[in-house]
Length: 440
Ligand SMILES: Cc1ncc(COP(=O)(O)O)c(C=O)c1O
Image (tube, rainbow, N blue to C red; front, side, top):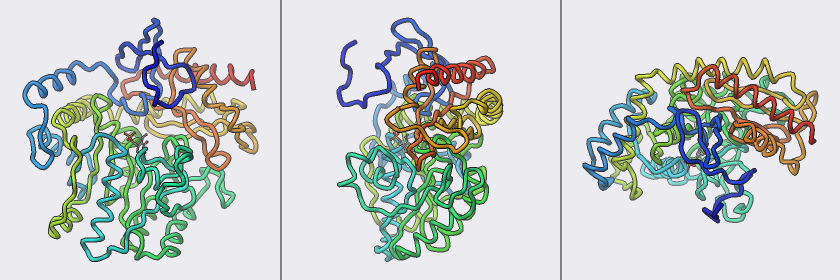
């Protein structure tokens, strides 16, 4: 196979050449069929191969291929109108980007600008969580807690971190799901320690994604976080790049608790992978303050690209018509209960958690103590290799065991899967675990 891109990270297996895709299925150049149990990088919510979306993209390009982002287009206006039905009340201003990292960068910059125009330019630090991922650009990597920082630690911005908020093996010795409100108090302590006058925003994934392996928080966590942020005039940024647009069985994960963040960041499911796009959605009254101060907020060349806007609008209209958020909740409940039934007794499985079509299976060396495997064993990657040989892809993640250095499989298929595909995912995951157990 030719070297396609020398800059890409090395995967856990040889690169696979995908020739075409349909629904949740991928077809390889060498004639194999793989069930996409990860929806790619947790992206392909509506499944692949939708002619309707191809036609929307074709029609849009034929009419218009670029609009300066400070102007507008019918595609962008239609998308904004539709998004207003999706985002929590009050989140009604949108800044569109080419992906999640850019959207998070925009959120961080907006938070700093917002405080500056109100005469609070000392509020410029961002608090992130010890285990988190917000993207691959410098500032997004700086607020996150992920192994992906490793080679860049020496240049990242020194923004404060708080301890992990949903703990598989937490610093207080509690075990998920018994961890509690201490996790939110840690944020308040960090704000007090740093001084509220120095903090612009707190950013977190409402349910931890790849840095923890699909971990929902306890019920009290997000309402408490909302209260703390409001108390200290700290903007709350919910990074829903992975969890947004129905992935957890609600439109956005924050809807599980009725919490309204100040900034909601999206990507991935917004276009279901049909076009690169991210979204930084902001409370209208905050944007108005910045506008009153006549401050500029620079666009990216491809902000609000009309083809991406048209595709996102088309994808969301399919989600609405086919009731795919509801389907994510329903099929997810089935996937979760089958995973628990078939895998919870497995000696390598330490925990199974999730909701909607957002499930994590934590892999451990010792089931009783939940001790993780040694990182050099690369257990997740080996299980993924075994699963791929059997025709299943899942999204590999870090587990919460061993202070975030553990192993986890994320099972996050497209919302269009049916019962036979769920059976296949669960059966193949179990068989892949058995393949690897024999080698450990
Ligand atoms: C929670 C979260 N935020 C941000 C990003 C970065 O998005 P992108 O890769 O589109 O830049 C990701 C990507 O996986 C993510 O999971």
